[in-house]
Length: 301
Image (tube, rainbow, N blue to C red; front, side, top):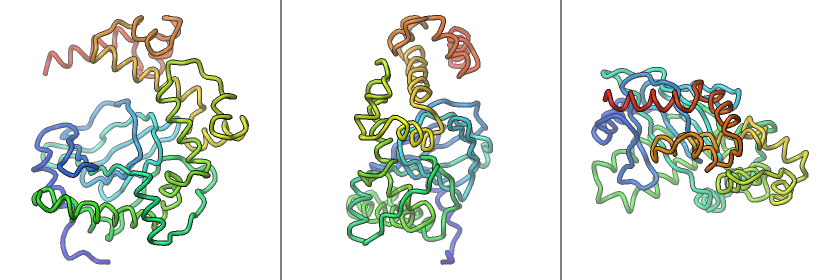
């Protein structure tokens, strides 16, 4: 399919109108967000939820465990389950900002589409991560452009947005990453079982972790659970829990201005020295120095 227009230029133009300042913005289409960055960023720690993220301009680098994924304009990132990651914008300028369009993925919509389109349940490749970057096809770009155009025609959103979102899901389902998208919705897949374990960890990250209990909860043997968890997330369950705890502790110190000892205890650490040590290993600074730097940055702005 050859597009008779420059899709990146048009999407960037629409994105610039609806994300006129730095940051991430919820659009009038419930499942769609637009992010904008005008300068390269320092490493940022956070979580990626199931989504399709299409880069329109600029470039980004993401670290999952020890894996590094670099992706830029024309690439889309498919995330099949909740994953704690470290990311940074590596290419952006005031003249050519980094723009990214993110479409949240809903497992029920994927299952419904698979049933109606008779898409086979292809198995997810062995040792596959729960996140991958690929090149957007012309068909996918065409659908993305039409979805963004609805932001300038809000009266059409209720009727048209669900249809175009469905088309985007179909393009990904029938592309090279289809098995990963299918794994989000297929109840008996290893990825879906790991996704259920991840959901439990997110809800209970401050509680002591017993691998045997969690494996039993998702109907897997301990060895199989360990193997598939690391294959999908690039981390062991304990490493995953640790990142969740540290991310939440940092949020508590930044947003609720808790001291390090209280924040560490709130997320499940019994030893302040262990909390400080693991925090420094992840963020490169002690909790106190990190917070001092963040608050100085905020004050300067």
